[in-house]
Image (tube, rainbow over all chains, first blue to last red; front, side, top):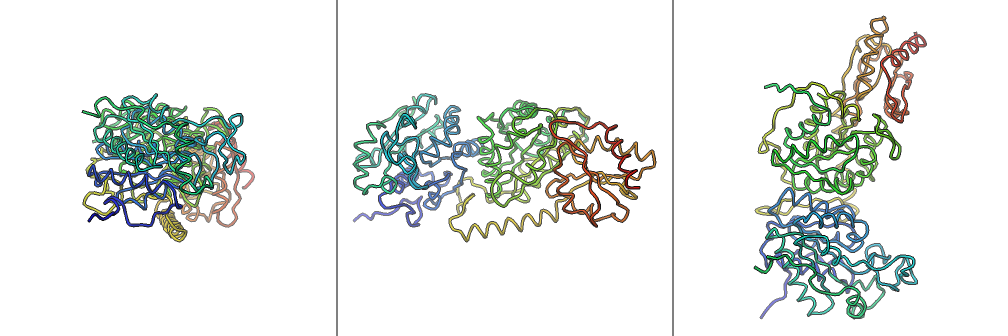
Length: 248
Length: 354
């Protein structure tokens, strides 16, 4: 008989997220990958602002915080000081694609050897559902209730494509956690990102399309369907950059 | 061994940081701080250190946060409007109880201002621009020697209190050359241990560096702890110099480069028989209260000389004994007093109070 338990790298704290939220799955995938690679004693995570900040309670390894958007800068300071440790940031889309866009893009440009896990749920979750740079055209938010109008707020931002373009020898992929199949795929990608760092190959970036039923004003199951039907066509899944020697 | 060299204030600051055991410098170019950045850019690789020219001051101070969290000595530098951008990170560093050194080679503001020497960032540095109940310790050097000595000391003070320490200088101190004796080399292995740092939880419980705790009660506790720490810093870390204070009836209060200019004027006035002395605050926060409490029986007036429209005078007004009158001589925007101006001011004031 097999027992379903939490990964060794995760605590038994209650999951501090809304019902149907994707953060629990995404964090678990990172926890499982850390277990699989047996790096719990050398990993340091960075929890910035918003829903993502709560991640420090769920992990059992060293964690630090960062100001809103600045975790790629904090990660740079950590990694340059401790080059043999495994450093990752866990950021929302507002954190990474709005207020922290400069820090993220410049860390990618410098080919910093740490990993960024970015949750793309097309909305600001913690503050109550305002427009994010990733919000889809027509998607209602509390700051633009009649939906995103590109004449007013432009078009959704495709972070994986941008980072794949500017970071040399990086690992960049977009995954979704709306189905068992996609979750299994996401796990492989998270491991590849951490391996890219372990082998000092380059920057690693994983964009995770994740449900926010509370922010989207949807039932949890409908939010999974919405990812499939609305988000994935705008944010195609797959690997956007793979370092040459990752498969060796 | 005394190593006597000729250096600019910016270079002296950088070299002292390296000798204090700092191997990490992150900054964004801004005048008149650039020579410090450029010095570190070539000097740090020589000692196996890391220099990163960051994309902004917002980023620089957060890279500092990462290295401080890893338990390493780290320094950043900027000027006025750049330091304004760093205030976010400085508040986080204070909240997370992370030691680091921040150098402000200030220029004249407000806004972009101009690059002329000024002391108009006194309030920015000592009262803080970041959110929340916190303080940073601030030193105001008055010579190239002190640029080195106070930077060197700043690392020990930062580590002792797990708090950021700032150096407030200006373009004149940063760019002028003076002879100085360089401080001794600290061995990296002899630096104070930092068991709280995040380094990977191997053979120990995990460490957390938190700017935000999980509950309201915890945040109140953290604020209480910080307040206690600031009380002890106020009790222990006041630094100042007094000159001709034995019989002084008129007391000049000046810090940094203004105190150098004022000293020349004071010496001339003394030759004329004017009983004038000087209190020179070296720690700007905590502001030195003790020299105002000692030797005050003769004092009839304070004259605060600063290169701004009146900032440090607020601290003097708060602590002056017996409602002794306080006068201000200063101007913002890059104005530099000459010793002659200051001398004339002292003579006029002396006539008024005698």
